[in-house]
Image (cartoon, rainbow, N blue to C red; front, side, top):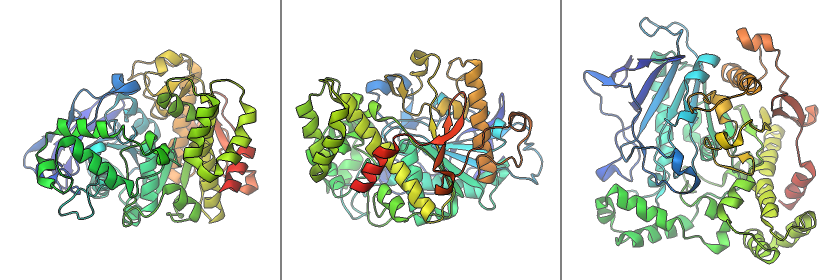
Length: 516
């Protein structure tokens, strides 16, 4: 295939044509370590796109160690492209397909586009779309050491990387059979990837680069960095024995020294901004590109409301709480933590939740509060705010308990039969790549979810039958109603027997809405 930067050669594999490790920006190394992504230098000859490139720099600790990429590098701004087998790339292309652009999660400190879980071949072939997955700078992409971009690191480079990848899609995707027109591009992501998607929905500079969005397991209420980002940068510099104002010293550090210092700094948490323990390195409210917290932007209507959005309501607080607290938490300790997070609202929250939990160990109570406050209720509130301002929103909950939890837990972060991103093997139909077996019922659920995601990519409506053929047309899938007050605020419950339903814990979310 001939891209704007030169000719590349990929592979034809089972289910799809694949182009691995395509550069979308110049290497962010040396003097470019903490700079905005720069254009690719065009090449002569044929670029080898037959194997994945190294993932971005990251440390392998905690529950994700086994899933950590084997090869990491600062030189990591590459993407993968998956094209359905029936697209003939050797002749001029007269019809073009919708494009799905995946942004992986991992708390902005881990993850890779080439993780087997995100193998895009099956999604591409089944939905008849071009699938793109990108790597972007992780912890390295979010250091803030000052405000002057000429003499300091000013953060948000990882988000700019994603934007550069979306621009590459606009410039190049037509030669892969993708639609550069409308543009017919859907961005979708999970966890930190969903946070990234929410930011692109807020950023006007990203507005021309995609048509619609899917936000999976979005931790809405985990705060983005504000003025504390500079304090974090100073703490990082102290770990390296450099001055925060000495960019030359910071640039001279090896990649491993930078990573080690960032991971040590990650353990320093402001007790009055306790929720930052869940995300130390990440996007920064710089007042220019990112102007406010995502949860505020969505509730105030400061986002691209003309774009259809598909949003999940997650029940995943248990993962975050049990990852942070590996010992029982007493009632007194839980009161201290709740007061640190919610301050003047703490008494009302304790009055609401304490009577519901009687165990000496209050971690289950904290887990439910985190679920309600970070995932479930802000997603509901944001969806309803969007509907009130005329946006088209669809919501779902993934409610399937896998057949073999022990095996599936290797694919994502799990605790007590709850998995963060549990629907991903079903959306990507990637279980066989990750050596995980599905029951017939689970394969059917995966295929049905692919039908919904495919309909969404082609039409902006997960229940649309336009363009559906074969399996999807034969299935007569349950109608996925748009989320609105006229439908009774129905969302889709994706499980073996998928069905539309009223959301869970509505009275609790009413409480949080009134609390403001």
